[in-house]
Each structure stands twice: as C-alpha cells, then as structure tokens.
Length: 141
Image 1 (cartoon, helix red, strand yellow):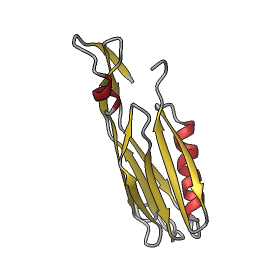
Image 2: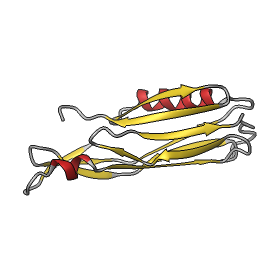
Image 3: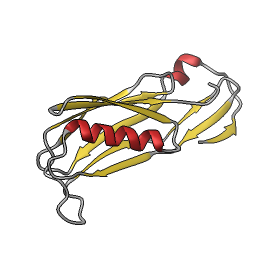
Image 4: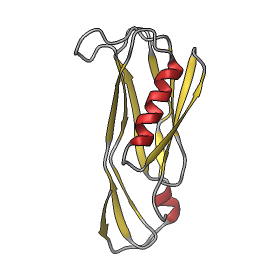
C-alpha cells in the first residue's frame, strides 16, 4: 500500500464503501468458481466466492486446470487525510486431479493469509461445495 497526502474533506460513508472488485475464473473442466459478493470494502464488508465440483486438474504447463481470483486496485482516503493506494492481486492456483472444492478453498485462504497484502481469508464448506470469504484489513484504521 502506498500513501500520499491529499487535501480535502474526509467522508467516512464514502471512503468505507470503497474497495477491491472481486472476480474469479475457472479454467478447469469440472471445478467451477462463482463470485457471490463481488466487492471487498475498506469498511469490512467481505467478498465471497463459491467453489463446486471435483477438479480435473492441470495436465500440462498451460492455463487449463487452474482456477483464479482477482482483486482490483483501488484508492481510499484515511481519516487523517492521507490517500492509500491498494495494489491489485491475481491469485492463480494449479489444481490436482480429484481436488475437492474445500481443498481448493483452503489453498486460496492459505495463500491469501500468507501474503503481504492487506487481505485475510477463511475457507468453509464440504467436499461438494465450499466458500472463500475475503476481508480487507488495514493497520490502524
């Protein structure tokens, strides 16, 4: 996150509603991903993706057999008047043959939680259907 000073009035309802657009795509024939809530806001509203189907898996070095989540770039103003720029994030996972939706959700959550970006994630679900909940976290906000 980059910070810069910006003159202007701080409007919490406007700034807390800003956030990253959440999109997803599956390049696997049998495991699918759907975005159910497509914005992760500064104010703490989480984004959700739902994963279903047993994975065919990656057979070679191409994009087939992968699943991806993207969080867009965005800017927001902090109460002290500084402007934060949050970088976008592309999170691809190569799937293994027979991988369950819950295993994929756990892999996404582990990747996001281990990263240095201002996001945390939690996986939930079963072998048939799973979700990943992604929230924005910010130090001292």
